[in-house]
Image (tube, rainbow, N blue to C red; front, side, top):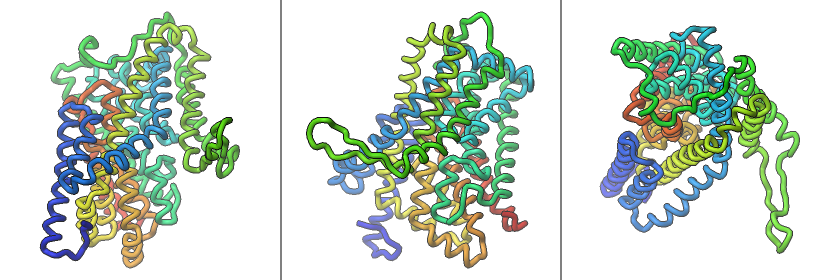
Length: 483
């Protein structure tokens, strides 16, 4: 039964119940994720529990036709990225390049600025177009080394990486190639450089306030006498470099640079090589239908995969011996980490798809549409739906697909440029999306070997700062007219 704006008393009760079912499923999944239970197991339990309470006859069809369809579709597209990202991070670690980068960083900026160093590296990679998930795998080895040498608690690493990779370079700074900055363009007729002043000022706000918060956390830990932690009790610690001599820091950072540059080049070249589509016959026996691959839908993923291969081969070319010594065992742990991170995120993707298909989700969308101010309406709608689905891109896509025409009409009436709508939607998508059940959060914690209980507080603080930044940007527009 669909929930619409005009409801009978009976329909209203049904919609109220369906809304409570959605909230219960979301609350349950956040609770089990925070308690450390596997979302691979509990994401389908939460999603199908919600379906059971809404329409029991749809449990099996929704599991196979929606949850598993979305889970498998996500893995089909992104598992190679997870796998290559994990291998890239592992060879960076085994080669000693991570330790060399850390040594050079400490010499350049000092041990007290370890957090700033990690944020800058994450920001450069994400702004260069490297996937957020890849950044986690690539940066963690030398983040751990840098924090250990600086005697900063390991539990602060996730919050630091989140600030660098999941915030201002993901959706605030103009021109960022991340998908959260690309999606609004197709709805508002804008481009990735929309509202450059507002985006830049919003990004600066997030960076300054985020670094201030993290530095306070570091100082509090230092005052309490807390160090990095006992490596023997910590999980997923990088393998110590066994070589005799560290590489030059400039050589060590070369693979990271090449990943960013190659990603950009492949993004431009792949459509030229393949055109709009490429087709092939999948069998030499029988009459199997021709496979047609639309290039535009996969070019960005191929570009990231190719860039990671370039990075891996560069490390092997300059540090074959130390990598080869530990590659057998190191690659096994990398593959295991990629499988865990990929399945965690895919399960979250399936959960979000099921929740978005329930009547209770429409109740949320209808309620949000009643907010009067156009920009505040858009910001709250996008960030709430991103939080419910656990996905910045997913929540924003749902919100804009359903309400973009309303946002545009209200903006025209209030003489608000489309560029402002673009920037507000983009930044809002990266606000409350990082609740405990978010796939990127779970991947980050899995890669670093930490739990929600240990590190989610800092990730949530960055989430609050990022959400607040959206309303700071809205306030700046109304106060100054800047775009």
